[in-house]
Image (cartoon, rainbow, N blue to C red; front, side, top):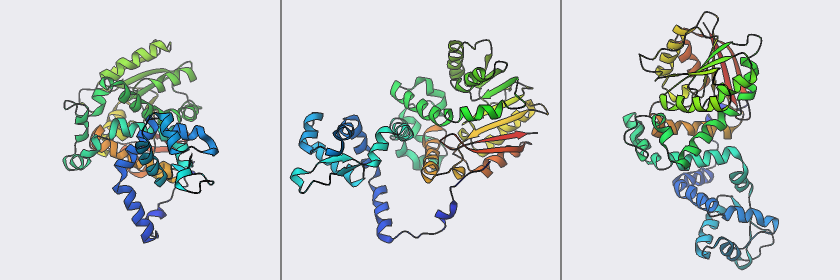
Length: 371
């Protein structure tokens, strides 16, 4: 059922006042520095100290002393955070000398909202430096920012297991946060009246979905298809979860002509996988699945479609993620709209059977296709 509330009407009328539009333009102009200002406040503990001060607030001298920083450094960061509505001045502050700061609502989300923290860390640790090459990535059709990690990788997936610990943590937390929340509501759909006995998890990554399937259904057997580095991790995780006998792997690049998908499975599953490919590549992958699938096979696609979000903030986050694909991941994919992804899959011969939108708190869509 489509419960989407997000509307394209906001893009049709330009009703913003000129003075407000100019302010929005300034936010963009200074965005790199304001981002790093907030990162510094988080990592130096300043935002936490302001939060701990509660409604009483805390002054710059006291804040600087507790954080072991100069009043100058503490002051410039707090002034910028004030301009961004991350912190507020207490109501009983009457002059600059007795000004005290409290945490604003925006600051609370930066510190306590998992979605915001995951997005923030992902942007800083994976995308920030490489984003400087976004223009070149658009021109060349390659993830030019990826060279910040290695000039030997053509796509980021080749090197996930080789990332430094901090970057690896941020990448996987970002990837898992979005899809994992949708898993509990997707499982009853997949294992409904016609529960699959065999399922192929394409792009199975660390085996989270495969393990969830085995926990949910005692009879299903799963085959994970992914790059060699990922299947090695998946095998370890499956064994640790006690499902080595029910979860197997098939290593290979799904775009490679020599890579054959396991044939005749009851279901093929792709979670946040097709957004890693261009629309032409999506059709190519779907054709491979079509060749491997039986007449009664169901293909499930779990994706955050930006035009099927309930809230503007969600849609904004999904749109922004497309830039990661452009400059860091592969240079040719994005987060798709519903119709363009559906059409690319149907071009391979499949037909959409059902669409479940707004699954989980992150508004995922689960699309069901059949021959």
